[in-house]
Length: 133
Image 1: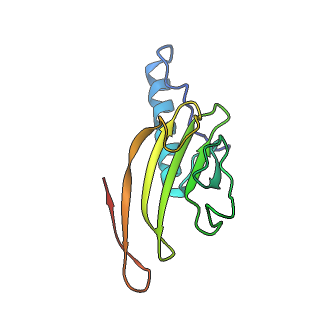
Image 2: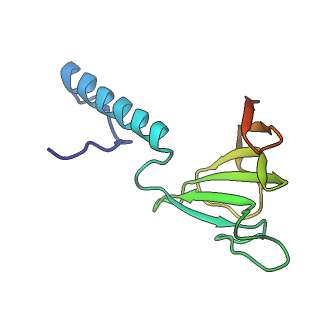
């Protein structure tokens, strides 16, 4: 039995009631799996810096490969999810989330803001809390 990936094109009005229920259930299960594993199949990730390019890359003066400013997830259809990271003492303290339907340049540019997480740590760098705003 093959895995049922999220299908953006279903449900549709031409489906029967049972087909609609089945495709909705399968999509919800795929979304559940994506939340648990942290990525949706079909989205690729590129870490980078804040340069104003379609595909961010590191430069010696703007980013440390061990502490990327950006995690950029894209699809073949040029959709984009962007996570802008703020680092302090080797830990991510703020993660801002953005969406773009057409992979635009500029950070954050005209992307739609989804929200952000503020992450706090104790003296041993253990996460003590995450607040979504």
